[in-house]
Image (tube, rainbow over all chains, first blue to last red; front, side, top):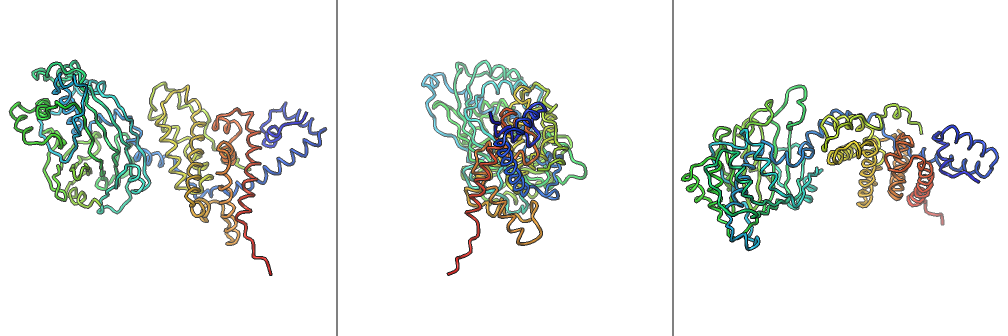
Length: 384
Length: 202
């Protein structure tokens, strides 16, 4: 019985154990046919090895420092490697999430029981055409009860479309992945790291019990939740967003490298089409907003006056705690924007940051950086 | 194939970092796996794609994919195998994608400044031609055959190759013999296709 090609090939690489190797040698001694095949296999292996040696890298070209590569990956991929829930609830997103939380909670609560009985008919789509700053007295997300609040909200949210984050090699690829043209600041000539967060969707179900827990957690048991609202649903569909990061930016988890850091070079430009919010027809957005504003610290009278001045079907409210940041209204190529200053980063070794937010033609844009915000508007206006 | 130098620098196959039972990747475990395997992964992918920047990019993609996986010692007892399997797959996917876009003549194989390109201009042209044909032949093979060849060319032992492609160690000899035969046939076809034929004298 002859030896298989596999065994002959293994012998050539010295991958047979001693016993098998000695049995094979004894067989080869008496089998001309196997010796011929062994010679054939060895010759072919030699030729293939010779060819593959031509693909071998030049050591000078392959100087790979894994620690430097790890830091690069950490910079580019911190958001990717951070679990979604941690990103959503990260403190740096507090303003946006505070608004979303207040609005989402209130959305579910203000829907009437009769409306829900009509089995979640579609109201229509709410889209962001403008942003507005809402100065609030307290930032309940930053207070000690934030963990309770996060738990309450996390339990109520069901993801229906799981997003993922993809690194794009250039603007064209990012545009292809996101499904729209990407705008980048012409004032920056360096190459950004482009991350595309693909579309995601979730639904939120209002619950009387959760609301009571939430109000208790934020110390607002004086606000009476509307009754009989269990089960009202809100659907949120968020299209793909793109984040372009320029310069020396440190993420929350990255170790601080030795030597001076050029924080003034760090800039993050974000863009996304407006999310779509769909819920039941009987929604009274103004009363929802009033509830949300009261939850965020406004008096009933202030909340009413403020909410009447805003079209809530097309406005994204950004609550800004008075003691945490200052803001000013600015003009970005004809669109109203909010420039927030003095935002405290999560890391204590980073200087305060600024964020400029504006909406135009169905898109929401943001520009974020450290230090002076004097270049924020020119950078925003240079987006092409 | 003499890869003694590379073999001496091999990271341990079963990384000790995988001792935690947490669902997500602990930062220190992920970093340790990265530091241990990244350089070798770049070298393996380089052989496939022939471009150092792209090799580093794909190596990073490999680790990002690893991070997206749930962490469990049972599932990831063989992190090295998972990494090299994913890395070679990404490398060959990239090569196929280039081949489809008819770009790999200029991109993957025509890099005179890379690899072991000789100084003699004529030999450099022939060397680049051979690199192109090798890569063209590789993408024509079954994925597992191409993976086995690429890993062996990078100095992997049979046990390491087996863990990376997910087969028994005893099967590697047979797989390798078959892959080499298929590769040589494919390479010869490419050579015949690209061989310069002078016009016949009339």
